[in-house]
Structures are given as structure tokens and as C-alpha cells.
Amino acid sequence: MNLAEALLRAARAHGDRPGLALGTEDRLDYADFARRAGALGEGLRRRFRLAPGDRVALVMRNHLDYLPLLYGAWWAGLAAVPVNARLHAKEIAYILADCGARIAVATDDMAETVATAASEAGTRPAEVTVGSSEFERLAAEAPGAPVAQAASDLAWIFYTSGTTGRPKGAMLTHANLLAMTLCYFADVDTVGPGDSMLHAAPLSHGSGLYALPNVAAAAKQVIPVSGGFDGAEIAVLLDHHRGVAMFAAPTMVSRLVAHPAVAASGVPGLKTIIYGGAPMYVADLKRAIDVLGPRLAQIYGQGESPMTITSLPKALIADREHPRWEARVASAGIRQSTVALRIAGGDDRPLPAGEIGEILVGGPQVMTGYWNRPEATAETLKGGWLHTGDVGVVDEDGFLTLKDRSKDLIISGGANIYPREVEEVLLRHPDIVEAAVVGRPHPDWGEEVVAFVVCRTGTSVEESTLDRLCLDQIAKFKRPKAYRFVQELPKNNYGKVVKSTLRGQI
Image 1 (cartoon, rainbow, N blue to C red):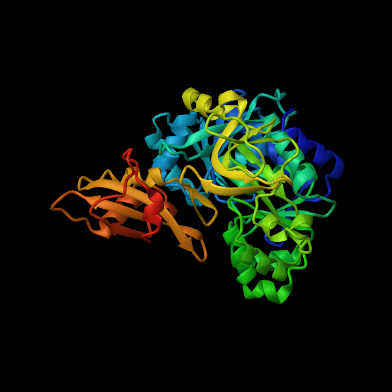
Image 2 (image 1 turned 90 degrees about the vertical axis):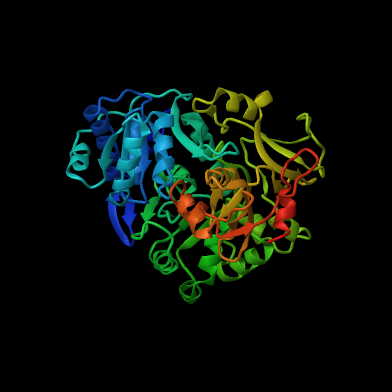
């Protein structure tokens, strides 16, 4: 059941197919891809005396060696902990300590941050920099066979922030990720000979998860030279490679559609853009279809049910003649093949079609729980259902429409920002007595962070001081883009801040 067996299978059957490309240049075929993954896994295991189940943190921007390291960790029977490279060193330190990572592998641009994080983690994981002489010695090992793994063995710890303000590690097993992989083929997209997967979104998140079905089908994995999303570069890559699929946040899709190079080229190599993280506004989706054609698909998932709750395939999005087309494309689609979906009332009882309630999810793709968080696990998986915290409604045709985010999640540029994380940092200032964070619409990023702040009587605080406080503690993208200093926060009869009132004031 080891996921590395999918890479080995692809290499044996299609060893001469292009496996990894950097920009427009094919670098490794599938035989070399598998060989490097196996060597890195063996090198990590031997050099650091790792045992099956030990955690390896990948604190990397998108890089040619990201996927060989990910599969190498599995090859050696290890659990991968992909970490968002945009996080602050203090946030990375927390993750390293929480999961008990034995090793933190960093790209050279992250090496200093990882060194700082490792020193603060307490557990002092070993540090390895990609491209260093030490790293290349690991890659020179002779690979053995992939370590046998049970379906229930841990494969990936996906850290997702929560309303407590501290990230929680969703434990994803080999079986969970196999279920996600099979749902990709059944519900999202097909993969044929000569197809490619372009990784412009972070490999630590959705794009890396969607590498799995594409590796299983021996599709080329394309890493942009920039390591991220650049409209002009993406246009070139979509002109050069063929049968290209890519995962993108809705904001990335909008930026791509607006880029003149995309309109000029017609992006002949594009097969599918799978967007997720939030539904697209219908007006934006129409513009995207006009520019890109019927090449868009949507998915809705969470780290706890990776990429696998509902999907809106290309055929449904392209069917503009359907009498309910606009309602359908405004939805998050229909449940994926392995998914049990329930809209529930306050006591978790199922609600009929058309009634709004919390979205509950079951199935083999749902995580086994949170790492070292038994209470949070029991609460989130109560009654055998994943309680998503999202509110929605399912119509008579089975289409799920998201109505609200009960956790007040802010999605900016496809990145999740949980208000309490920011609020807790602001409240560290001795002259701040209350803080509430909400999102406001932004034309490019979807949403941006706004903080409402109450100062101690007789005091005032400069915005620049709060900026510095945030930048010292959390990632830059989570920092408020505006501050509103108020005398008091609106509250209901139970003393809870009414954030809907605040949103009406921005």
C-alpha cells in the first residue's frame, strides 16, 4: 500500500517518459525520477538512522527535488510533513516541535529560516539544504525496495490552522491519499499519455496532493523556474508543454485570464485548470471560460478530507445551455465518489435537500485524526463524521452550495487565514484590550485582512507598531492590510463579537 509503489510502477512501465521538468526543459525521465526518490529515501534512512513512521519536514518552495523527496520519504517508510514556505520562522518552529520532526529539509532560500526555526523548536531536528554536498551524498545512495506499509500507516501530516490559533496536524494515511487519487480519476480529470501537471501553486498543499494521481499515471511534473505563479512564465509553459493540468486558487485563475500573454497565445497546451479554496464568482468564471474555453473544473475539500469532498467537472461547467447553469457553477459541485455527505442540524441530524446546515463528511479519504490532539479529534470526528465547520445546502440534484464559513475563515490569494491567529498576536500588545479580524473583498486576492482594535483608555497605538508585531510573529500574508480603531466591538447578548456588523463597517 506504500504510495511510493505508484512511482515505481510508473517507472517500470513508462521509464522513458518525461518525469520532471524545470520550466521548458525536461530533466528526469520516470526511471530517473524513481531512482532519485529511492536514493534520497535510502540516504535519509541510513544517514539519520530513521525508523518507519519518523517525520520528515519539507520546508521548501517548489523545486525540482520536491517530489523526489516526498516520494523518497514514503520509499523509506517515513511520514512527510510538507510545510508552507510562506510561514514565519516561529510558526515553522511550532510545527517542527509539534510533529517531532527528525529532519527538516529546506531549499537554499529557506535554509536560514529553517535554522532559526529548528533552534527554537526544542526538539532540534537535523537540517539538510537541497543542493548541498550533504544532500547530493544522500541522493547518491543505492535505492532498495520501498518499505512495506499498511493502509493505515501515516503518510502525510497536513498542518491546517484552526480557531484555537494553533495549527493542527491532520494525519493522512496511505489509504486516505489512495482514495483521493482514485477520486481524481473518477470525478475531476483524466490523465493520458503525454499529459503534464504544472505546479504553480505550492507543492506543500493542493498542487502537491494532485501530483499523486498524475505520478500514478506517469504524467510529466512541471516546476516553474520561478517556483511559483508568474503569468508570463505560465503562458510560456502552457505554450510549450501539452495536456497540461494545474491546480490554482480562484485568484490565480483571474490573474491568468487577465494576463495579455494568455490572451495572445490561447494557451494551446492547457487541458484543465482545477480551482479550489473557494468558489469563483460567476462573473469571473464566465470571463475565464470566454478566455480559456471549457477547461475549468472545481473541487471542494479540506486538509482533513484532502481535495475530496465535492467536484464540479469540466463538462458541467461547460454546459451553459442547462437551465440551472448559473446556480450550478455558483455551487461547489456534487459529492465525489468515495464521499458520504450530510447537511446536518445542530444535533447532527440529517437535513433534507434545500435546508441549510453544517457540512459533514465521511469516507475512506477522511483523516484518522489530528496529531497529538485527542480532544480536537474527538470533537471534529464526532459520531464518525468529519465536522467541516462549513455551512451549506444541497439541492435536489445533489449540488452543494457553500453559504458561510462558520469558522470565519479568510481566504486571501488561495491561502487560509484564521482570524483568531491574528487576533491573538494583536492582543499581545499591552495597550490593545480587544481585537477582531474580518475579511473584506479584494479585486485580486479575493479577500484581505482588516483588524478592528480597541485600545486601553487613554492610550493610542501606531499602525506601524501593530504591523511590526504581526511581522515578528506570523507570516506576512496574514498581516492586516488595514486597521480600524474603535471605542468598542459590537457584541450580542452572550458577549460574542458580531463580526457581520464589523464587515458592514469596512
